[in-house]
Image 1 (spheres, rainbow, N blue to C red):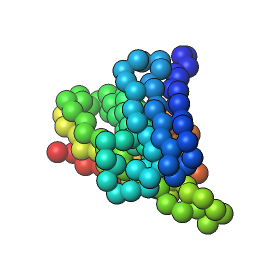
Image 2 (cartoon, rainbow, N blue to C red):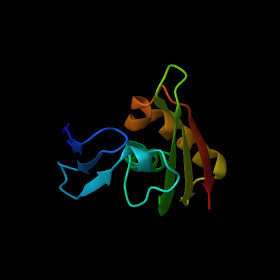
Image 3 (spheres, rainbow, N blue to C red):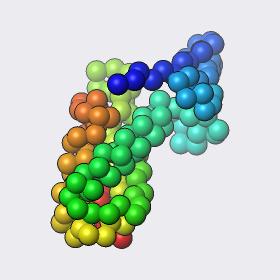
Length: 145
């Protein structure tokens, strides 16, 4: 299996510095990061590690769920997956990811709501990004549309 790479170039202190995250493997872009914007409610045009984790988790989860729904006999027409990754204080000091809320809505002919929910829960447990984030509480809100 492949290895994917991202690179960050950082200049300055935590509070006054900033950086650029480059998605090196795919070459799809370079994105600004800064700690003040990371800790603010308004991202102001910058990304953050939490947003990048949310992107990784939502896309990984969608792929895993699509596979499981197909194995269960469903025909996946669409999945709309969001991942909300929260940053907060760590009781041990500094900051930590305090939780991840996955939400999925699907159009999947051939499965009922219970079958969809079963696959959705299994995908939450089986997606490689979920496995990598086992120290974080991950919640799931799943429903057919």
